[in-house]
Length: 103
Image 1: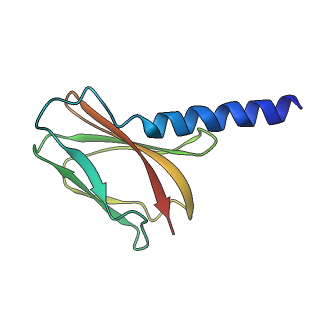
Image 2 (image 1 turned 135 degrees about the vertical axis):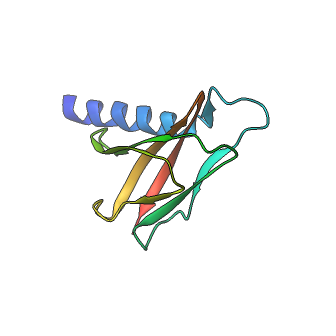
Image 3 (image 1 turned 180 degrees about the vertical axis):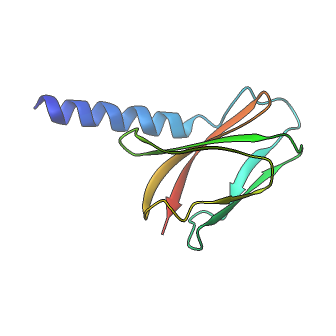
């Protein structure tokens, strides 16, 4: 019973995290990625600036599966097995959190 409550609470937290569109977003700035779902092992970060981007990817249980900083727009995620993840992208003062599907 306690385990089910924990998993329900954790699921609610993660999906609440995904539903937060953007933290610290300034007017006129956009930060995102494509494609989603991913089937070729690469995602491309879209941004209006060329600052370094910190990328965090979590599985649905909240375990960090990838943490990196990139200066280009391309991110290789071939090391991540198929599944549903939460991706958090931070560039300067702008942060976005989204659901990521890897096929």
